[in-house]
Length: 631
Ligand SMILES: Nc1nc2c(ncn2[C@@H]2O[C@H](COP(=O)(O)OP(=O)(O)OP(=O)(O)O)[C@@H](O)[C@H]2O)c(=O)[nH]1
Ligand SMILES: [Mg+2]
Image 1 (cartoon, rainbow, N blue to C red):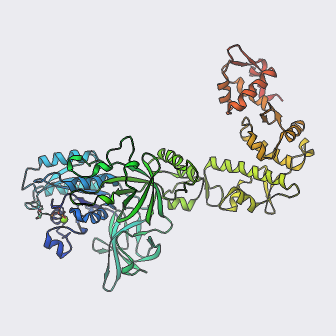
Image 2 (cartoon, rainbow, N blue to C red; image 1 turned 135 degrees about the vertical axis):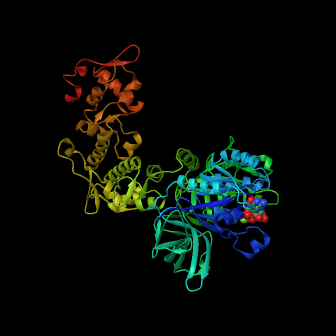
């Protein structure tokens, strides 16, 4: 099925891109009479050939003239490999720089340099110059071939180089979600609306249902053509013409995309990492300095407030809100089907005047559904978090930011792998989930204190109090000591013992605390937590008397037996040990560690030495009788 590759041309106006495609394929990339009359490409052209090794290579030919930059961008956007063309007689020119900057911004990593018009001038100088410019970009070191479209010199070498390029191209995932950026839409008599585009990865079949972004109306593929042949299915990479059912020609145009339902997020706000782009040398006389190299100010500060955003064959206006040095939030004038990890091109729309070309920056999408930045300091916190993310965030990154996500939402963000759901299709960040469990304890105990006669807190009230999007999350959070009964979150009745004599709300609060201390035995609750659980000094004293809590100091209460557990852990430290070592061994803070050590000193379990270090005394160090086994 596969064995097709798609390559896009790039290079200065008149440098021989279209002539090269003509020479390679025998097909005419300049489809319009006007293009042929003016000897200049205006819109995208196409052609394809059979490679020596049997694969097929399709070409998208872009215009080099500055006036048609949007068409050039629509061509370069969706294609994974380039044929970079420089004419031997003219050498490197302004649009060479511009196209290279676009390639670098989009992160295109595969290609070939073709120095054309080798019949007019020695190609060596142009080749050397071009290769050194290209080396500094995402293309890196690429092979180069000199050709003449007129004499045919170099064409066999070019065929061989294209064959090698095809072999070196990464194999796209046939199971990847489908997104076809539309580059042409037209009607064909008898068959209705036809669109063309590049399928970079994934598989489409005749009869498949897709949705048309951004309207997200469903369309179905009536017929599928690839390189002029009707085919039952196509696997990326492929050039495709799709005959669509369910859509009129008027409602489809370049920049829209056919996407697989449920697999893409229609985003109108994205957080991105910005990158300055190579290949923008000052001697070319352009306005590149606006985005410049990444100086101390970062890229974000150098961008205009409003940019033109390009992705695939689409473009739209976006407002830029810098969050940090190289992280920004973009608000899109029109929504686009995006994934995290997508590469965007940002241009300064203000610099479109004669003699210069637009400043360019690259951006990588980090979040397609970024949370609102309402709290004070939220922008700075977002920038710090996002700065630590890789170019391709995974489920753990996104969950750390969003706390809770449905698996389907994560899939639509472009992330297939995810942890086990906490309930249904809900995924949770582990730390956030623990904090929610904590919070549930507080609201349920608070409810019990406020309404001592109630049998429990209604699940819906708990959901609202925790601001959870689904009541099933409350059910999943209600682990022991909680339980759900008759739509109420209840604390399981205390298991007999001394606590049974305590008032119910106090029992409830103690159970919550003890559940906390079961998982983190030396994380003593702070004043705020005690207050939220409705525990004042009197009720704590009652709990201590009942043997439910252990008072270590005025500020520190732990579960009974915490002192012995601490002694056991401290006995395993190299003796003597410092307070900091003790704090670490107990996984707690100074607020708890110091009073606990002083408590142990007073109890004679530890001995404080003149240098402030301590040793665990006597039997605690006897391996035959570990202290944990006592009491
Ligand atoms: N002598 C010579 N002329 C060439 C060669 N390749 C292209 N040309 C001529 O250069 C001119 C421009 O060629 P095109 O192929 O239209 O250039 P292009 O890069 O497609 O130009 P745009 O699409 O407008 O950016 C035409 O007159 C071609 O005949 C070559 O190898 N040798
Ligand atoms: Mg051309």
